Image 1: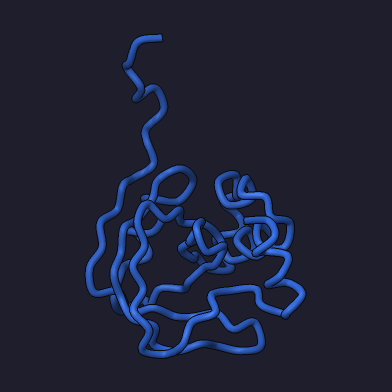
Image 2 (image 1 turned 45 degrees about the vertical axis):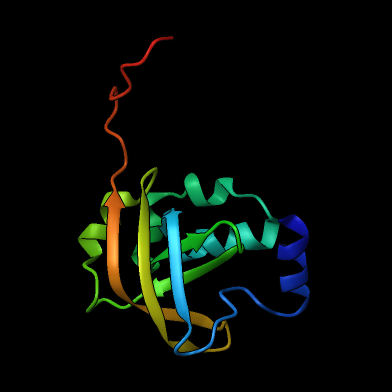
Length: 131
């Protein structure tokens, strides 16, 4: 994974290398802030995705594809920000959609979500298993 991230950096890629119209299907993808996703790709360390400070969310939320070391913005008309916030900081999202556009020099893909399911961040003290 780290080699993929370093190869992407050497090519100037920091987001999903996707094309408009391309199908996107993610399973158990973490929701994080844009800056944290970029940092995770630059360093190859996934803890930047999961331990992202809440203040970073003001710059935008993205969905991180751990397998591809890529991230996607989700079109606001297709999913509410409040749904993404439920998964931020320890939850995840399963989604299906299509890339609508790829923006700017950072090549950030925006996905129109057609189907999704959010697994919210567990509440403190929710684990009741045997230790």
